[in-house]
Length: 585
Image 1 (tube, rainbow, N blue to C red):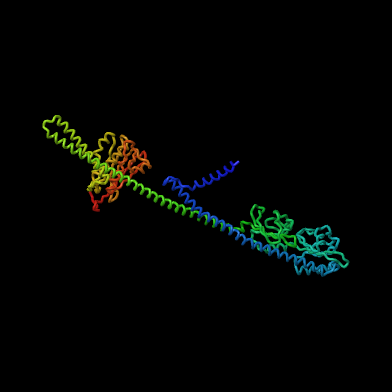
Image 2: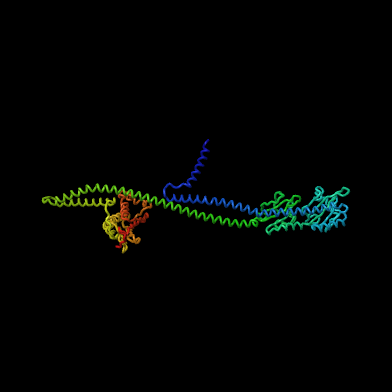
């Protein structure tokens, strides 16, 4: 039953381990992959440290600025709606108060007298100007007196909704409607009782022109629209975008609120718009203002474009700087580690050479003693044989003793060179022409090159300065290098030996072959003692000894090789003599 939990733990552990693998460095020391991973990790970390706070700050500023700008734009719009609503309220309240005052100041008998009603109507027109007509309606809904431009006397309103509402509420203001006039108007109705206790209603109407003037007085721009609605969604004033008076508003009405509010809507054309509105408290109207979001937020869109450009430029600059700094840091670190590795290998190499030198010195001294005894005994034998008159096979024994002495001399030369490698021999410095030394060395190898049909090509520069060095040790250097070149090329190959002046104080000798070449890994170890690619035929001491001799003589060695294409080894010799002066050969 514990298997699911264990499986979950294994999955979590695996995810954590996979995350760590991304940041882990390869274990193989100074490999190129190690530095690529290090560069990637440092770059990623620096980008996260710089970009993430920048993105968060940009997001917060973006939101705050958009919100602040929207409020700065929408608050004046809400204030305009609220102010206009208050003006509408005041306008309607004044007209209703005027009708109520007239109904209270005059009795029913005065009002049904059309002359008296006409005089009252003229005063109302002079005071307010918007009234179109004035009529008296009895309790049965019949208009018994009327003053105005229409023939409405005797009209029956008993079935009209407004008539019943006026009877219930006592006062009534209608929304815009046509009625008998076939023209949009608003009715004000006030209920009163005559001396007999019979109810009657004074009814006045105004046209919607004044409402249109109120809307126009809001001073909106050409991209905005303002209009009045009733609570059933019928337009009370014409709209620029949504229809004419008494047409149905095509969008859903907003939630009821008696304070100015702004919400976002999708207009009939599929564009986003700000819808500012408020419901009238005492009257059946809704004042609405519509502004296209694109027009309202145009300054924000312009600013947003500039902010995005600045943000992108900042991100690009950060990327470039971080990439450059990371690359520079990793390169410096790589160079430092490479120098450290080179210094360590140099120290290790020198330690090995020192150990081999001490070993070679001990071996040379141990061999020199029996060699000296053999040399003395062989010389004595030769003297005895030469002075013996009656010694049979005298010539044969003299030949044998000469062979022994030659072998002893050869062994002495070998031990002499071993002592030289061990730096226990005095070096004889003289001014030498490296070309002559190369030619002398080639005399030992011409027969081998001829046997293998290997072409030796000499390219010596003229007028090279002489070098201060030891002839014998230079011959050993060139002999070792040429032997390696002969071993690397196949029959019919080419070995080119060239001399040139690298700079006024350095002469270079380059031995180039078209042999098998070496891999990059082999190049790293060629100067290490006992490292060989010749198998049982090699000792691994040729190039280390050569390296030691060149360094002891104050020179340097450079190797260039590519597997399958050949090798070029350049030996650099200083022109200066031991006293520090320059010498031209």
